[in-house]
Image 1: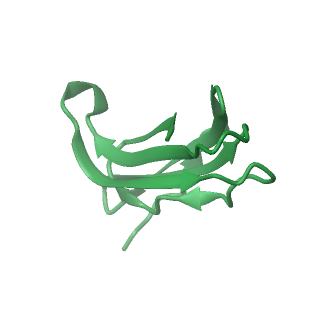
Image 2: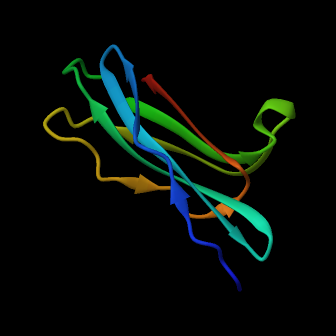
Length: 103
């Protein structure tokens, strides 16, 4: 397996009433194929009995009809500290998407 060095974006933040997430996208090429992973962290910022839920996925051709290579839901409801940094791991694709909501 021949991998080119990975590069990662700077951390970005998503804020909603009662929750927050920060994330970064990382890219590498292995044997000529694009791979992507996302690293992210969740915060529950309001003691209201609700949790921050994140939907994370990796895909190809995000704007032209996705081909999803991996997806998962995560939840966090501790208002005293953020979640550990979570990672999707490397998957085929060229985009990492993170959506958050309160549940």
